[in-house]
Length: 474
Image (cartoon, rainbow, N blue to C red; front, side, top):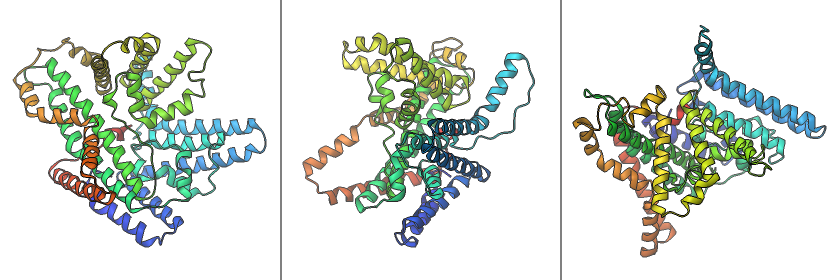
């Protein structure tokens, strides 16, 4: 099930809200139970069998958490052993479902073998919920969170449907207290509804339209491959993945607010960046934070006595970041591409960028990001597809077909570009100050805007085909 579906919007969510607020009688244990039941139903809507994989993962990490907590009173060696076993177990589950066939196919290609591939389907969102489950055990080991004695609360933490299958990745110590005590105010519900509506609008009204334009431009026409079509297709994909993923994060954060949960922000207008370093502080913040806290800093982070160790730490993080996104060489290449840019910026490029006008810094960033998305997009025949961006294997620069698609989507492209900057919030703040709106009046306006966004999105959903979120496959 996806948030951008009529079933979720007009059946699942209303029924859940009805049960949560009317049947629980403000009993937190009952509320948590209702959320767990509906979260498991949400996940099992498309893949019933794999809900047991997630439950088994949570059960194992619950036991690992108990082992770590019990070993705390004994020896540090026992605690480390329990932690290592937990990490190995979680990564083994992730590796089996996501990377086994990738490894087998590469072994076959490298050594001329014929090992049959396994008939394994990757559970949706496994990369997200395995990282969250590991976060729990690591936080207990570090002492930043207490061992969770309630299996129900731990299952809710991992399975909570808003962030279950496409993030944001929630670290256990950020949400631990909310599992045991939380309240919901009218202002919080209003914020949640508005945030959900904004995310739904991003997905339905912008991301899906950008996807259609990108697919049309990247499809080969009768005249062959056109350089402009390739670049324009990647450009539309750049906006598609931003509005798709940030829209999902907005909806997840908004839905969390409806039930008293506060998730950290996952996007901060990344295309506003003036460097790749800044971009990765603004894009998929929860993933970057996870790798920084659980991989980069434990390896030494920036506080190392040799420059090569810093580069080693960055290499490991960005290799893993690329590999986390998918079992394909183009994702690893994409991760290493970002690693190279970050190393260049740390070595000398950032000092050079500081000396040039802001416009050119921003232009450099956008061009670097755009080419990175091209690597990310072209999973098959990556190098030959990248070559076509520069005319290698292309039939020409442009044709009538390409021009007609660009002309028909120029308003969409302009709107996507404009709204990727904080224009709307700035207008809202200025109007609020000039009209001297009171908080209650602001909430009314936000409610009206939310209703309009949901209505327009519903009209689009009724007349369009199913379009899953991009990050579901990761």
